[in-house]
Image 1 (cartoon, rainbow, N blue to C red):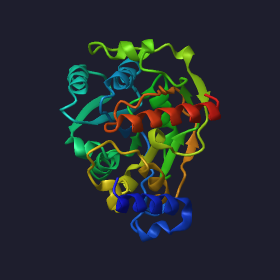
Image 2: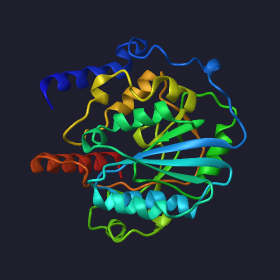
Image 3: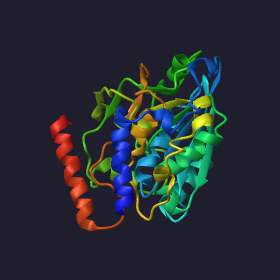
Length: 295
């Protein structure tokens, strides 16, 4: 990261804490009364990214096959790079599976654009036809009653940003964990042993748990006005734009009671490229954070 981007990153971290008015960077946020309060069979777009994480993505896509929605229409959008052969093969496999209530939507990007997650999320936000958009990561699963209960929770709502009040997570898994090893095999529909997950309660709409109103997405995109978060990169970028999105929407998100949100936590960050020592430092910090937080 060059010095200019380093300084900009620091500025937007501080800005997202409320030290700078969000209206300076995003004046077009629709007022709540201007947003539609849709009801009935809603349309949801789930937006995920994958680079060298096909062994996690397989569980996300499999969860939609095992637990297809009956009360909401879902478009499953995955941004990927064709250079990632394992992910491409996995998407080809799932794209051939017809699932009631699910529309598969694979969106290829050059790796430099994929590596800045805000770029794909912004494209999806501005172009979505959905009533709501769930921005997530490919290690999240939508299991039993998740999406149909979400439909109930979204009826007549105008909130800019929502998030599940509970997620069920693994401990930090290493790459030799059997779950991850199985996910690395030939593409297939897989399931998990749900008893290995434990409940956690996020306090805000974090990166994999951001459910945004469709009118808001179409109006302001995803950090569309912050050039740093729309600039391609030669290496995978840590997703600092999550907090900026909350800041621009003037909301940490409101919790909603939906079941079946599962997430695989993992030590190794296979998506990162570059200096090995730097990657080892990231891994060490993740282990330390997990120990401090008690998981």
